[in-house]
Each structure stands twice: as C-alpha cells, then as structure tokens.
Image (cartoon, rainbow, N blue to C red; front, side):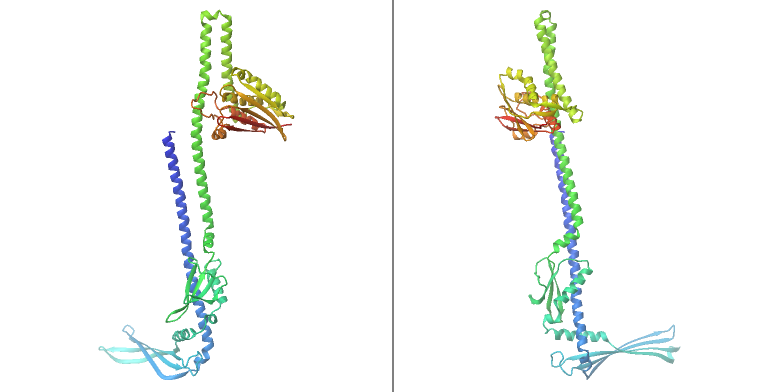
Length: 520
C-alpha cells in the first residue's frame, strides 16, 4: 500500500467517523429539544387547568356563601323583555310551525351590603318558550280555514346568564380581598401535583404568586425564579386587568428531561464508543500491518544479505579447492574446508533462529525443564562468545554474587538466551567490546544484568527492542548484522520460564539488559 493511498484511506475514515458522531450528536440534541417542547406544552396546559380549578372553587364558595342574600334582593320595577320568533310553513303537511322565545330580564338591588359595597345591582333572566303547530287548508292561494293548534309552553330560569352575571359581580368585588385569603399554598401545591401527574410529569416543582412583579405570601419555601426553568399563568383574571400571576419553577428540569430519554442517550453513547473503538482498532491494525510489512521487507533484505555472504564465501572456497595449484596443497584445502564448515554453521544458526521463533509462536517449542545451576549456564554462554571478544580485543567482566543459583529451566534455551544477550552487546559496541555480567539474589529471584558500553538506544527503540523483526536503524541497514529475532526470542523464553526481562539504555553510553528468574 503506497503512502498516499494509506493517508487517503485514513483521512476518509476520520471524516466518516466525525460525520457519524456529528449526526448522532445532532439527533440527540433534536431529541432533547423535542422533549423540552413537549414538557413546556404539557406544563402550560397543566397551569391553565390549575388556574381554572382555583377560580371555579372560589366561585362555588361565593355562590354557596351569598345565595341567601341573592334570593332576598328586592325586584325593581324595571324589566326588559326580548322576543325571538321563528315561523315556517310546511305545504306537504299543511302545517304552520311557530317557535317563540321571550327572555325576561329582571333587575334587583341588595337590601344591605354583603360585599362591602353600598348597593349591588343584580339581574335574573327567565326564558319563556312557546311552540305551536296549526293545521291549514288551502283554497285558491288563501287560508280558508285554520284548524285547532297544538301548543307547548316552557318557562325556565336561565342559569347560564345568572352565572355570567354572578361571575362578573364576584370578580369586581373580591378583587379587594388579599390573595392569601383567596387561595392557599397547599391548594396550589395539590392542584399542581394532580395536573402534572395526569400528564406524566414527575419532578420537583416550586411556585410563587406575584402581584405587579412582586412576590406575595403565597409561595413554596424554595421558590426561585430562573430563566428557562420557570413558567407562568394568570390567576384570578378580572375584566379590566390581570392582578395576579402564578409562577411555577422546575429546578431539576434539565435532569428530568434527560432522564426521560436516558435510554436513548445510553444507547447513543454505547454506539459512539463502539464506532470509535472499531475505528481506532482498524486504524491501529492498518498502521501495524504497514509497520509489519516494512519490517518484513527489512527482514527479507537482511536475511538475503546474511545468506549471500556465506554462500559467496563457500563458492569461492570451492572454486579455490578445485584449482589444480591448491588441490594438492593439503594445508590450504583443510583451511578452505574449515571456512566452508564455519559459513555453513553460520547459515544453519540463522535458519535455527527463524525456526525457533516460528515454533514459539505456535507453542511447539520443546521446553523440558530441569534443575540447573544458573552460573554454569552463564559460563557456557560466555565460552560461546569468548573467541569473538578476544578477536575484537574486548573483555567480559563477571561479578557473580548470587548465593542461591538453582533454577528450573531448559539448559539449552536458557544458554541461548544469555548468548543472544552477549551477542547483542558485542554487535552494538564500537571498537573493543567491554561487557559486564552481574548476578544477585532479590527475594525469591535471581537477577542477571548484562551491561555494555556500546552505542545505546533511544527511548523509542527501548520500547520496541523486544518486538519481532525490530532493528534500530543506524544509517546503513547492514552495518550491524542480524534479523531482529534475537531479543524477541530472549523475551519469549524468559516469560515461558515465568521471568521478566527489560532494558535500560542511554544513547551513546551503552545498555543494560536485566533478566529476573524465580529460584528453587
């Protein structure tokens, strides 16, 4: 995958992720706004009902209180009569249908002042309805005879007119009464609870009655007017003006609205998290695959280089042996044969490294463990690299201070672990290698430290040094031979022996590899 395609793919994935998250957030905000509108509409209807209920209750109380006084009022001489007549001729039935309604308006005056006024004018309305049907006979377009008529008369008091008249009187008179005598906080609380519960609104509510923007005694204990959380409705409306306003506050409005769509929010959050996690995982896998691809390419290049050198050496040695001048020189033939054997051994070692890593990944590596002396294993490993150290004019300092040295381990693989660590120290030492090996006991563990005075590692390299195929570049990719498998093998073997391995390094000052293993 080329770099441009990779970057384009990542950009498209990021844009898609941001688009999905934006749509989710927009949808959540729309849901919250819709819930707020529904909440506000329900609250306004509830407050209108509360105001209506309180006014109806006051009117009924006044009717009950002042009914005897109204009945005792004197009728005045002034009366007004209004007539309404409707007539229809039905020629198919030979009938005349007549409907007449008369409304009688009687004026009264109170004998005393029950409403703290000098006099009170009051009206009552009586309705007289008369329905009659007359049979007729037609003769040359004239009514020749009218038969006896059927007639029905109904007289009743018009209560609805009385009610309107009483409401008008009461509104104007009780407006002088203090608000706390007209309605109590308990009544408002009860009405609010009932109306809100009927609309499935279950949240904390506070209220207060205001008159000319000033709060009255009728209020709840913790009422505070807060913009966006408070609604109002007129209370005790008169013909001329609005004297009182009921303000209702919902201090936990936001929390309540969010709780009504909590399942939507939770699901959205879960899905957004899954999307982000999936995106991050996919992006991580893409980057990792790209890195692995680069590392494998690097490994193949190194492997090719590592094999080309011994193969070329072997070919040269064979060609030299076949030369008639050399084939009879026993000493040179033996030297070239030894060269071929060493190069073959070197290639075999490289193949074994690759195979061991492959078996480790598949858990097919044979790790038969025995009780072994850890210092003996260190001695075997040092003997493997002594010749290389001497050839380069270096030295190995040993400070084996551990007293308890018996461990349960595979002698072969543990020897390879220490050999690889020493080989790594030799490779990354400029000039003559100076290596120090130390052992100490720490609790129930034996600790091995292999230190060198080599080129060291960066912080980034320290985090990746135990990764398979990883090799820190030093300009020329082949200036240090290897495939990046040695330390990966070390880590795998140590962990299979229930141990730990880590590195401390400083660029230009060298590195220290530490292995901690449990003792018996």
